[in-house]
Length: 572
Image (cartoon, rainbow, N blue to C red; front, side, top):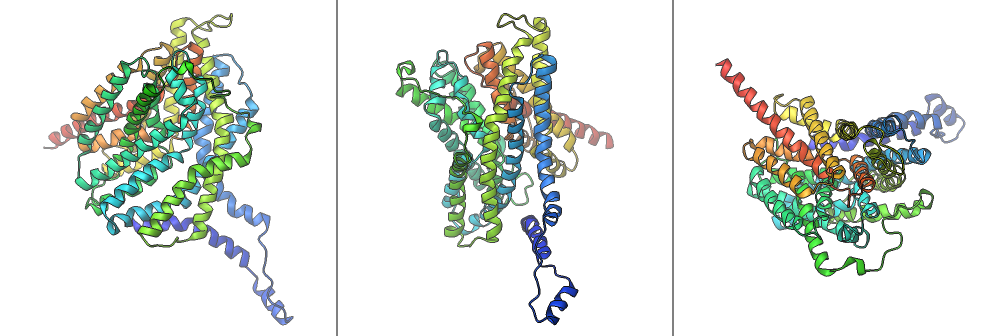
């Protein structure tokens, strides 16, 4: 493990070495010609063509990863809007600029996290458990989970959601998103911190994942049921469960898993190939409980939200030309800065180690901040407007509005809408890089019993069906409480009869599918659709998309176990 980490850390170091070699390369003839003339050897400068040859292969690979994840989704939404709904994409030039900013920002951000944050986290994860007390490890785990949530790129999508909520039919939900968004983000961060802390306790006390899932899910469902029977709190349930999907992104998951693997090794579980699984599951459940608890406190604090003065511009998205680079950089620095300070302080104070490869780490931090700033700009002018437009135009397929008739008969229009939602979820999942990496790991750990392709297809189908169910909730304006209780009852029943390894795999697969591109896009799609059909809110799609793969993976796990048992009996 240490050798692999060292190799990964040195990849960019090799790149820099190549640059330095190129800079210092002086021909033998020039050296001796200068020596004969009594002058010092001349140092050649790096030409632009040399920079192009060195940087292009390095950058193009990382940009193509984001291109494959972003462009197919954007093209699918645009083509569906133009071909099936017969509506042009509004402000297409601005959206194209935003999508380019999203791809460039994600490329820079992921590279920055890799070289600026991961070296800290990996070193702390492997050394902190053996050099300090469990109390220090648990305290650091809580702070890491809480602060890392603030640095998630998709967390910014919550701040733009308030304007899409009906303040008359969901006043407390509108109040939470427009007047108290910081409480919402803080609740999500605390929820993730508690989830990471519980995950560390699991390693220390060797709790079974199945037991931990049941012990966490039952109180979460009970709290959800309590909120569902209160008309003031019921509209907040969809937001609460959607927040669980937003937290499991490219910052929280790798940092937390690095710490979890180190704690598992210190606890004597380094030989367990599934030691890293499980924490992502908890990071999806705890935030839902935290948001509901904050909503309960808000209802007690503000008995009548309609009596409060309205906030001018609440929930509105600023025009792209009003978003100055300085403002975006400051916002990105505020999100990433506390996490950097925490990691540096722990390494310096508790491990007593200086920063290794300081220039490389500084490069990573700077690039991560710059990448988040560019991504946030693209999020505001590209992803969110595209999702809002798609959600606002989809109802034209099955309902009339603004004096125009529906494009298709009602059953055909509804079917087309659900097929569109399922295809969007399936395509977004197939393109998720984290799922592909997870599939390779699972195939190796199960000795080929659960092939990578089968896992990817299983998770993608689960997400597709979940998003279709979430869209149905908005279109038909169903209550989300019976949906959540129903699907999680099925998931819980499958969990009780599944083996430990498939429980960890299935519940963690739900968090892997929600990436920084999918979350804002689906969230904006739901909010736009909710406004178009007159629903009080457009939340709940991400919640259904998270539980779908849990059920599908557990069911496929049953089938694999049965097939393996039958094959073993036939061999006898």
